[in-house]
Length: 114
Image (tube, rainbow, N blue to C red; front, side):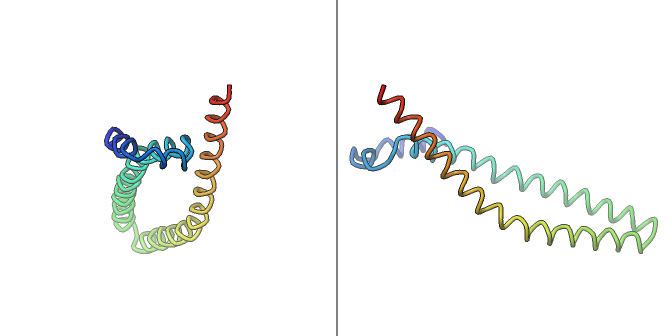
């Protein structure tokens, strides 16, 4: 995936490379490879957690229906609160990516000056 992305980026015109900082391009290529892993790992983790919660609710149901209902309500409440709070993380994630790009650009520019 990384080599295909590199080939795609390197096929652009010289003007493209003059208009964009080298660090921005490098960060974007690296972010693509990291993003693929970041897409699949949470899905696997969610499946594992869901399976574990379902088993816990089933086992709790064998003890008491009220215990099972309490656990189910707690899980639903936890998921709702997590989803609400995760919306703030997207904003901070975009800010972090922009700051990393700027920092890498300054680092590359300082190396090219010397």
